[in-house]
Picture 1 (cartoon, rainbow, N blue to C red):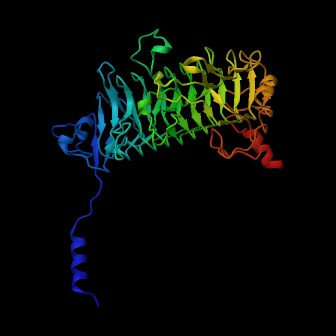
Picture 2: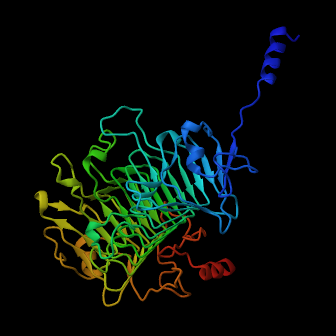
Picture 3: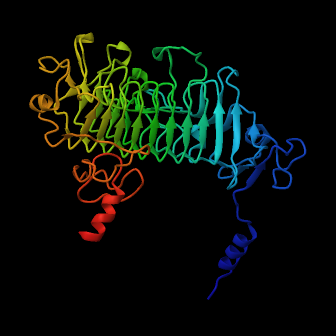
Length: 475
């Protein structure tokens, strides 16, 4: 028997209309004065749509920014997301948000903590005196449990370039950010030509204490300083299948050097710069210093990367550095601990192959504590690969051979020095000594092209296609 109360409940439920997320359109042919945000009558600027005073967007809405060829430029700075939104161009178009770097203290796009869960896709973003995309935080050391940063943000299929400083800036506790399928190039536009590397600060991706970040399938080139780094206590970061070319300083840094106030000391009392980071299947070429560097990291994995012509001005292709953390007395400045380096292919010209730093400052700072954790790597240099351990008591403090490195560290016993080469895309030629010379690693199951690796892993970012075809026919 159906009761009257049940009938009334159904009637009330059907009388209340469902709330659906809205889609708002912006076009260079639109008008902020007479438009209503529809496809037929779009608004003209993103700033107008996103301004809370105009009460247009709500959580979960989509802002579709038209970007047809010849009519795709939006000269706007400080485009600010305050609630969770998707901001995109339609398929086949790419709107260009262009912030003049002469606008002091500007960023092109800012995502606030209240906009956690937002997505940016199919956009071109340039300029910003500071950053192209800036993920803001409310967190501060010693603050309450509710302080956090812009998290669960997806940056997909973007082109970010000619930014004043960093292309993408991630601040503390902006967690679970995904950056994928994007092109990032030419950072550091505010620095005059001839500015020294020491006086620049302009990364491709700069992550300070943002955990669980995933950076995958991007092309990063001509970063004024470093292509990608994650530091300040960032945990569980994955950097995979990226191509990083011609960084002014380093290709990828697992940790670096962070001011103490940005560490979460409840989660990370030891001041480790990076914890459980994974760097795999990346191609790094042409950085002036470290190809892949580790600084105050703990439990890091660096596996199946290809590193070419790096460290021409210092460091090494694979480098264990030290961190100073502003020389503050309370900071711990730990050495790298428990790294695992497997199946990396190093092809060097002038630069060293592997190096562990030691500094006499602050009572002595070491780039590594304990085992190097390195094996099944491949090395080639124009003359001979240099392996150096500058820690006290080392017989190869100024450099030695792979054989001397093995005796001293106990590492790389299965690694090879051979005439390795790759094509311009970093792929292995038929018959390469890198084929089948690696080892299975639990944190790697594919290659830079997302192709499955075989039981006999190849060394480097590429799993040889020709070898795979051969084995599929005869194994």
